[in-house]
Image (cartoon, rainbow, N blue to C red):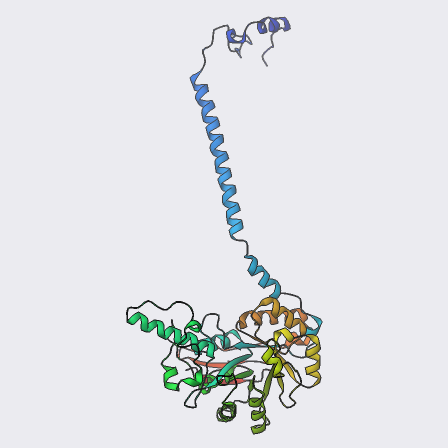
Length: 415
C-alpha cells in the first residue's frame, strides 16, 4: 500500500487554494500543482445523469398511474356487489327448515334477453333450470286462448305503428304506446287471433303463441306450469269473460294432459268456476292490498277461499305470520313479482314456497347458494341432470326433483 504524506505536508498542501492543487498522483502520493481547467465532459455527464433520473421518475409515475387505473377499472361495480351480497347471503333458519326448496317460477319465461311470453323466453327459462314457468292466458275476440299480457300488446301495437310510419317515410311517434290514445284502450279481447298473429316482436320477428302451444312447449320440462288468467275488462273495469275463459282453460288442461298445470287468477269467480268444473285441478287466488279497489274487493283477505291449494301473495304482504297462517290451512304461498335482489333476500328468509320473477337465473343462484349453505337433506335435493339439445332441436331431459320436481324422462320437439 502506498505510504501516506506526512501530517505537516498534508497541512501545507491543504493551505493552497483547491483550484491550484492538482490531482493526486496515486503512484507517488504527491499532488501535482498543475492548474486544472473545468471539464466539459463532467458538465455533460451531470446533465445526462439528472436527465436519466427525471426520465426514470416520469416512467415510475406513469407506471403507478397505469397500475392504479387498471386496479380501479377492475373493481366490481357497487351495484353488482350489492346483488352478489343478497344472492350469497346466509340462509335463514326458516329457509333451512323447509322440507323442500322454494320453486323459482319464470314470469313469462326468462325475459333477460328475449321478449316475455315468447318461445325464446320460455326456452331460456327451461335452459336456466327454472322449476316453473308462468304463462299469461287471455281470450281473443273470436274465442282463442293466447299467451299475451295487455302490457305486451301495447308494445306490439307500438312496434307495428312504428313500422308503418317507417314505410311511409314518417317519423316514428314519440313516447310509449300507452301514450297513444288510439291504442291505449285496446285489450287482447278486442282483436282476433289472426290480427294478433300479424303482430311480431322486433328484433327477432317472434309471433305470439297460443296457450296450447306454450303449454306443450314447457310442461314436460318444469315441475309447474302456472296459467295466469287475464280477463277482459269493460269500461268500468269489471271482467266480462270469466266463465268462458275458465271453461276453456279447464278443457285445454285436459286436452294437453297437463297434470302439472296450476291455474290462478285475480278474479275469484274464475277460480271458483275452475274448482267447480274440475275439483282436482290445482288452482290459486291472488292476495293483495296495494290498491283501494283490491281492498274493497276483499283481495287482501288471505283465507277468503277454502278449496284452492295455492295463494299468490303480493310481496308487500309476505311475512312469517301469513306464511304460518296459510301453511296451517294447508295452502302454498307463492309470491310475485320478485325482481329486486333485496326483496328476494327478504322473501327467501321468510320461507315462501315459490317466487315469481323475470330473472330466474339470479333467483336460482340465490336459492341454490342457500341450499348448499344449509346442507343436510335439503342439499341432497339439488341434483339436476339434463341432456343437451340436439341439432334437430329435440331435447331428451332427465331432471331429478329438488323436492317437488316429478317430471322424469320426456322428449318433445320444441317448435
